Image 1 (cartoon, rainbow, N blue to C red):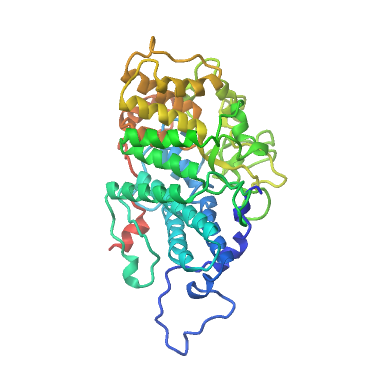
Image 2: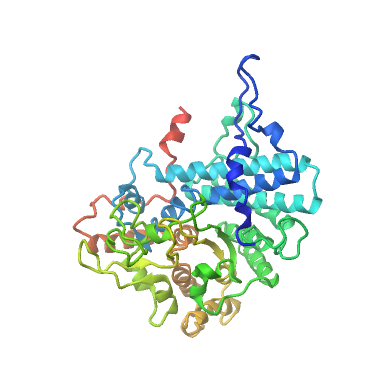
Length: 496
């Protein structure tokens, strides 16, 4: 059943209580509303456990996460996209010129990631005591570990030293969780993904329970893939390679022959999909509108989204840069599957390319059903190639093999040791391949961070951007290439 884990979302908003309950009322006033469940009354049945886990997933579709800010926090920070939206926050994020206040965007992300952590903590605290099917319980707890690890993964990568709450707050003392080091954050991410690997099934096609056949839920392969990614971030290359090889050995995933099928709304959750955020078209609170946010700012007709749009802050969020256009090799099939390069700006009269990976037209504007691909199998191949190369260059070795599997699908010639003769040159080739294969899927900025090239690459990118856009880019833009986002002002005030 497609996207089934959102079945109970309308109930979860009421049924899943906040963890932060402080009993400070008098006996006369401290009366429980019989129609509102609490932490104590909710976690009773197998159905409650399922709803609790579904609530963790629901955080993925919110404005602070993949619906809005995660694509902006990541892609706009790198050299592959920029914003031409009139909302200044987006441009400022990409040009490293955010003020000291709390401009909203990354503050939303910070809050929503922790909302996901809190919901996962409730499941991990309450579900073990529920009398229910043991195998289903294990799978649900595995999903909670995976999703908590995922939220911590983004928090550590984006904000660096963050708090790591591992239990729900039950008193005022629980509100004050100290910041951890980035190393401690990564240790927790790795721990959660390890737990998930041990508890999750390879797929839900053969399980016995109400989750049988459901797509979109976290799997063993997804946990292995993210565990490998966490190892790679920490330069544990052998451990990373082991996880990526384990994903391959599951024999669950494969590259789809046609690259564009990964983004076809009618072919979502396909054989290359390891984990993607699920959206459902319609007026249901579960829809996406990437076709609007990824389109140019000034489309005054229905040629792009199927609807006449106004030039507002809703549009122009992730527009490909010239650097991104220049990254494609001649004959690369992925370019036409990723970009439209026919739109001439109504406002300025010049070409404005835009992303079409998430482009579909819905019956009602702003209510599309495009999923967001978080992890594809091609990423496993490329990260395995990177891990093997970093562990030790081998001319014509397995790193070349996995790299070329991705290139061949794109219609490009194989790379060989004749033209890529050493570790440094292969490192650059793999990084370039990741840039075009995973374009606009939130990987580029993390790749720059992981490889230690963010400052150098972005300084060079800044020089080119300032030359192209000299008429409107402030001279102070890109002056301070921050590797992590500052804590939102609202969070800093809580500590005062």
